[in-house]
Image (cartoon, rainbow over all chains, first blue to last red; front, side, top):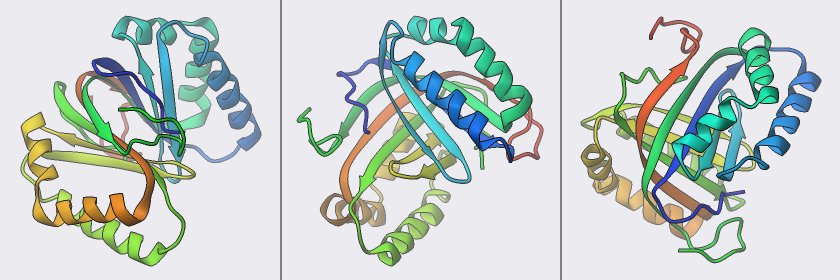
Length: 114
Length: 114
């Protein structure tokens, strides 16, 4: 569940959101569809997601151009519009360049990386 | 709860973790103490946090030097050691430079920012 990203540099897109109430099923379906679709995009390196009162999803990309291309994928554009109009009370997207990283050697409690 | 960060550029530290089970009280106390302490640090701009199976905390800093200084604060060093030894099955820290951001105008459902 911790993304197995390569050595920096690469791009991180930090998406932070506060949901409106209601429509749990619709939200879950849309989120699942986007999770499947994002993994097929060129330059996709992985993503991490957690939600309690706040939701944070960080997706990792080979380059900022790859992240921008995902933003423009048609099904994703529709999901973004739905998010703005129906799902999120507030959200913020931050596009960042990862310059260094470190951590425990085991990610997902399995693979060995450095 | 969505951090009211200034215009980019600034630094984001993305901390992703998988907890070990047990010691909920000890974890909660340590997390609360660190949340109070981090907010007092020079260059601190805000942070966002969410946890379900995975935990993600993103802290925002005026500069990478400010983020590095926080890493070296004594009480935080002790907390990091405790995290490595007792609390986390796996974790990853990524230091990134935020280059652009956008989102809804309302953060925390309240303040108006652009």
